[in-house]
Length: 251
Image 1 (tube, rainbow, N blue to C red):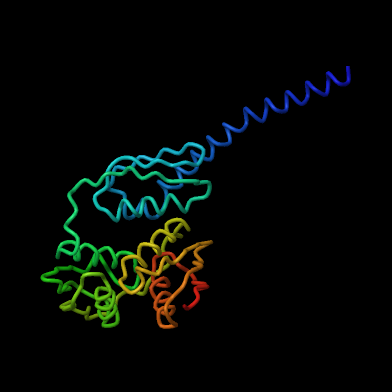
Image 2: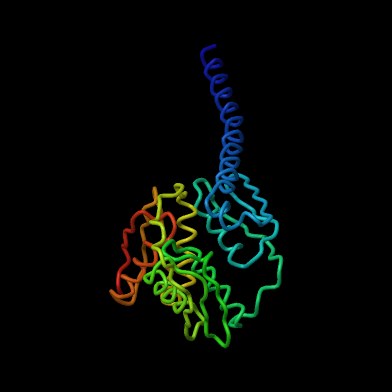
């Protein structure tokens, strides 16, 4: 009788485990989908896109349409950085035909996107026009320092041959930066990866990025100390980054 009783207990335990596993997986999938939609990237950059997120046991599939190539990449990078995600299959389609690679329109879009990720410049107040690879910037900068940094960032975008900065500087100092909403780690990681990819000086580094409570840790190899310092500068200026631990080594 004792043997039979023990066997029945084991069978019951196995049955309960079998039932709880799908429930746990379902909760994880729901959390993944919810976290993505509430993320800074989805609320800030992708709010106008039609993105459907389907997670099954941590395997995520993205379907729908987005307005640009970088939106597609941002969505994937954000999902990849969420806890519980094992893989991401990106089936997102781009609504409009993207401009030809290296065309003026292509370069213009890359400049605009690069400025978006950095908090020390204002992508919203900066107008960008590109003609024969020469980027002309117009709009208003809050300070001379912001104007110069906007020029520096634009010059470091692939395809830009030169920058003409016609931005005006506000007569009264701009408001000091205030602490905004806390940005989730997955969104910070996605922005850092995209920023490093879009900057010509860091695009080929293949830097590994990890974020924990706003602190970004970088791994990989740089050519020299100057390159390491540049990575620090760019990453420190990404929205949501509170600190950078640069563990990259030099070749």
